[in-house]
Image 1 (cartoon, rainbow, N blue to C red):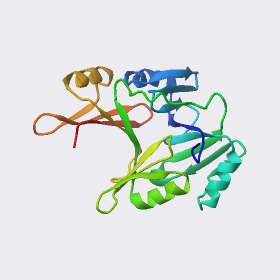
Image 2 (cartoon, one colour):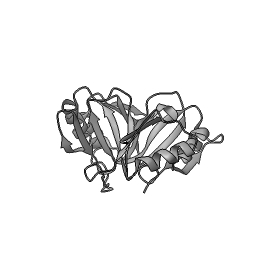
Image 3 (cartoon, rainbow, N blue to C red):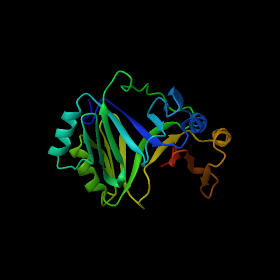
Length: 231
């Protein structure tokens, strides 16, 4: 089990979750559960909750067997908690990525199939733009993540994981965290994607080969897809 909980979802604020669902489905996600206030989806690799009763930025919502145990560990690591109740913990990490810890129940414990997203391909990471990747990784380690990879002469990018989520701390202009996927991109793939996301931005190199695709999804979520053969 990861330090913060058994499983985790990307929690996203949407004014009308049910209206946003169609666009998420067009990007390879399937609905697990839907109500007027909340829609839960998965693409086999990650779980996403579109919720209308929250008024904050994107968050990672973990389900923990013991809220008290997680609370003790976070405080022992020198980190501050913004909300501390018997049923919820909230705190903010590097890049202003928010974390929510709630009690584990049979309904919120989820397991990945590991299948690739039929549209987007394979998830690389949730990318978190930060001012200092090294210090961000130090913080993450205090919350149970471990370093998977560090790159750059000055460690400008550090990937960390807790076995549930891969976070990629990257030193770049600060902005909301975004999802990074890699896919087998060819002309047919681009055509199919544009049918689901007509506003997608396609960037090509001097030879006309696609090097980056950017899609915007409801909830102010950006998805960036790069070719799986890019060097």
